[in-house]
Image (cartoon, rainbow, N blue to C red):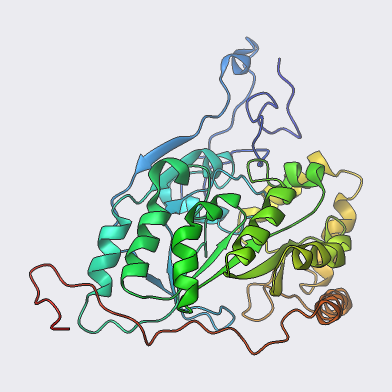
Length: 363
């Protein structure tokens, strides 16, 4: 019988994945659990394979009014994410599709292949007001399947033609594939890219983000983007107490050395099913630290695993949260990060696409 971790999925079946289990989503009327029936039939099950479902979207620009988020518009080309980051706060969204936020989130993916077409239509709407569009606000726009589907690149092509501002957040070096577009947009003040560097340790990264590029690949991507004149930010996100919080200064040192001009951070967030998924992972990968991690985390959320209140959910409260904020601020000041006036993307260059059947511009 294949070994399992804390009652989760057999190790061989989840090789290269982040989540330990695949518990039923919260909206399902019935729960499903794998168990050994005495015939060792679980051993006959194959490993979890990535499947992609084409999902024609009805609309593509999502709006948000959260006061602690810096953008009002976003596009998510994919649902689910093969990177498999155990800490991903987007995991619970997979329950809306009838899937588990666990292994299903990493393996049952959806691609919005009509995204560029819809975007062009929505940008051409008569009353559309240009505001920065965020790519990567939920799942990574440069996850591995982007190599095949190239939806993110198609979106960038539309935005470039329309001179529309865009902010990208990713942990993938694949973003460098699109330097041709990004550098042209950068010259007009239309793009900025944030690269997430969670740890500099390859082993820790492998445990936390099993299918994301290595830390060095991300540092190399920062340098390539910066050398191409693209405004690049380093994101230390998420900061997990007693796992990677000791690396704050070293991550900022390395990302600055590779060309990052700004930096930001977010504390670990554990909404909904992520609480259980993260605890399972901790018990499996860092059993000697699990209790300490949770105790510190709860100290930053009023005794709970997570507080969803705006302004608190990403920063926490209390002495430990204050210490992290102070360390981050001092390191940023020492390195000259975030000194300049906030880099604002331009909206005044926006040129709406010609609507289908509409009149061409005179000039």
